[in-house]
Amino acid sequence: MAEGQDAQVGVFGTVAEAKRPLLVMGTRYDYMMTQLPEYKKMIRFRLYALLAFLAGAWLLLIQPILSAAAFFLAAYYYQLYLLQQHRTTHSIRTVMIGH
Amino acid sequence: MAVSLSEFRAPKGAKEAHAASPAAYAPTISVPMQSNQNFGDGMPVNTLMTKQRREIVKEWFGEKWRDGAIGTTYKAWLYCVLSVIAVVIFYGINLWVAAVFAYLAGWFWSELLLNYAWSVEWFKGKALIETK
Image 1: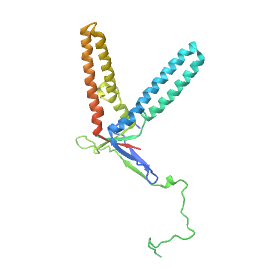
Image 2: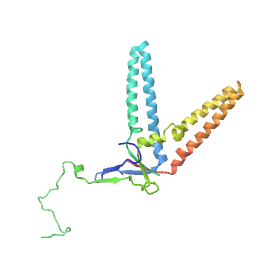
Image 3: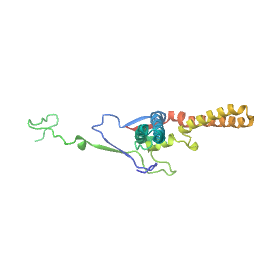
């Protein structure tokens, strides 16, 4: 769905089976404080993946055995980075804020 | 023969029909949360903006100075600290250069205060509804 204010959004929920509230109201501050750690994690995992990849490339020249471990860590943190991306900057979860 | 609901008793052999999937028979509800209609002055008819989390996150945690988000608060803090360190380093070398860094430290501190006020403090009183 295209981003923007004019997007027509609806909530489709199975009312009879719902065991938790469909909508929760709070403040922007609360929501930001719940999302901020996830966003920070995303940035951190991206940095770890990059550093591990660079370390692996460097170790490949001097100690190839250790470079395997470094590349493993690079792939691992890259997957975690993608996961955090889906939770934050790629999430299509609906949020309503007042004008 | 008409039987009132209070007197109705199910026949002995009657069994409740079980759906293959209960969710398939459950009623669903559609709540349109945003209207595309506008008032004459251009204001939307509803009082809520419906957005996606990715839009919110990109808007609030951004790093562009003009957006004034929480990301710029962190950035302003970092630049302010670096400027203060530069002042200390250049104080004994060249006072004019140190003065420039002192100006920058004050500038970034004011940016920090402004961004914190508009992207953190101001948000404390603003309602938000999230879907679970």
